[in-house]
Length: 564
Image 1: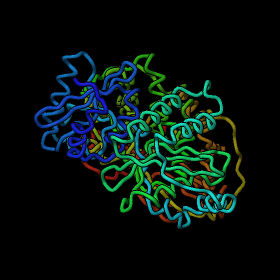
Image 2: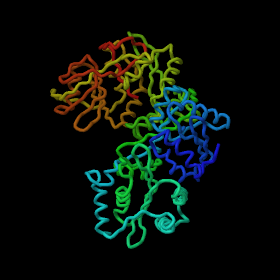
Image 3: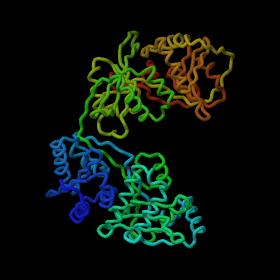
Image 4: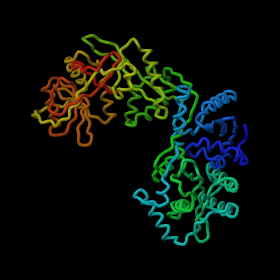
């Protein structure tokens, strides 16, 4: 491996041009600016060039710089080099187009992890040069205020040799206290100084705004592929309103004619930086990935995995809040019935399968219910859930298995078919509202459920413990449980102007009407069985799937309504 130096620019640049990657990481100006951090090394072979980064003890590769036909040759060499030198193979900041092209080559040999904190923000150049349109109104207002206040400001290209001291003085002044500058800012200043010293060798533009002969803002930018320019550095006096839009606008008016896009790099996972970049209205993102050799293990979860499973749960299920998550892990989660898929020590997929009894044709049938399965969104679409699911199904192959039909098409490939349907009725009740007694005796829940399920030949058996947890669940999810003495019970919540009844358990059709009269003249949506008759619009709702079903027949004698 050769150490990357400014003298290598004429050798390296042709390979960057051949690769023609979108994204700022493949810009030699970026490499030179940050080489003091990443200590880049490179090798040139007959058909490709490779680059190895060495960052704080971590070694990783850039995408190989070559044409598509030599991707496999280059990557195979990079993998073998990693093995020979005892470090994990990893390509960082790989763009989506590159990932899409190598996936068919390597199939399941590699793992691709989306790293959104590395995604590039891309903007429309004309929008930021002209500041036209509704999206630019706030930025335009700031710029116009700047022009009114400082009508005699001067923009000019900076000469790194003549203006070096002025630039350094500005950096010192804007950061207030150099001794307390963050490590990243100190590194950026070093990178800026490096670029200034290379201005005669590499191609980039640097411009500044002067107010009363004092430099108050400067910007450094260079050309990228794909009609894009990259903003490397943008510094301005934060106390001067409109100076930031002014320095970018001036640069675009003076340079890079014919370029369509602006690359403003990533947000590094910093929330404030993410918000500020989004406020500038990107027109697209360049998605970035880390690529590893695939090393998958599937095991039963341990107690030590619980924290990571909980984090995965919260990442995957955005509709969960703190209360509902705590309810699940306090009351339902069991590591002995949970299986995890890991890449090395990183937990990527988890599945919980719990025992459940159903009554089928007056016989108790022991089966299992897949209570939850989640895969980290950054690795979805690579068959990880399929691997874990097949593993679990093989362990429980002698039992009927049920799951909720949230994504039916996914589970059909595993042999699941629709097993239980509900009727979803959209109605406005108008029933005689006889008086009824509301009870707080939760023991009645099981009594009414048992009477209700006598109407069916296939249903979930629920014990007292089930109903204790059901009441807790409703509290956690903001749902109400109403028990009507001698009539039944229902679970509901209010959503905008509608009453959503997620479960209604009744003794007969007359008692059902009495309970619904509780919501007379209101818009009601009720999930229920097919043996009742309520005026309103009805449609079928697929509630459960089973690996015991061979078709999707709707059987009105079946009832199951399961929410954890």
